[in-house]
Length: 454
Image 1: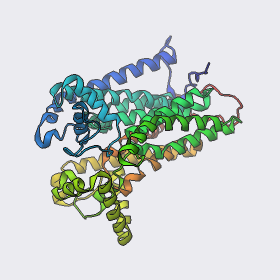
Image 2: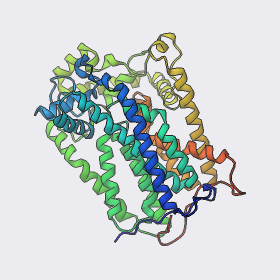
Image 3: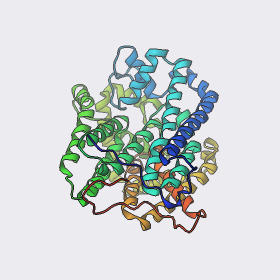
Image 4: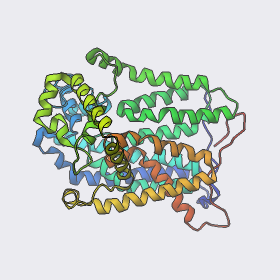
């Protein structure tokens, strides 16, 4: 039987517990209230905004965009298809969210009020449940006091509230899955046997079927965990192979489907389209809707004429031609996208601000949290470099693809839980402590030859 990690030692700065209440009970009570309040806040917001999703304009475009179109096609018996009208099979999205939405459509009707409420309620629930892995990740790396702060900050975190109630994408489920994977990466060294690694690989496969960008993080976090095992003189080949095999088994049915239809085993086929959308023209915004079939009759005609794979190949040729002939412009735009993702700043052009009137406030909030997270990362690195490394890897690797395609703040949401944890660590480290204890993260065990209790 696999041994689960014991309750971690409470960081000295965590403060006294209520007399007679065990740390485990106290943590469970905190998680209950954070999840419940987070869900309540988001459901209250849903009650005010859900009617926007019922607008039939552009064929219910706000109802999940392409997700809604594909879900309707699935329920109508046409399969995973018709993302942009009657356009046939597609691989521009991965299957998890469209099939989830299709299940809701099948039970509650296509584009109905009830379907909107159910989907938004599920999205709110996913966002609220993210309090749980946030708490465990923060507790494992920085102690109980930071874990409490991080869980409560997530309850009220504006981006989490907004993206879980104003969209029907993966913006609330993916943070839950990726933060759970991050927690597993920190914990696997304390678990025996291959089954935890198999579960780890399956969850990575599910993350890839939500958003293939997550696969960029897989080798780095898995490598970090294997290095921790190696330091304990434990085998790494079998666990890593089990995780990789489980991941491949999870995504293989989708790859086979795409190989049979498009003659390419792709997870998503629209990468070069996204490069084109974000680079080919110099527009006010970070992307150009006229470069997509849904935003241009010319592009739609080309898409229908060439078919999906032919159209994506044409976009690849256009994008590569642009990159070869305009490397300086591409580099400067990539830097601009990097700045936008971490500060919220894109432009102070009056015309742009008329379309994005809340940008000044957003710039202040986004930049402030980025600086807090960097301060937390800096402090963590100087106190315990080995525990700071997985945070650094995640923050560096996950958003990198968006620097080269086009950004949206929603694309950073999957790693915002780690941003909140690091910001909480910075804030707590500046607070006065009870007693004379110096605040520091939980240091990892480096040389033990057997699993330790956290």
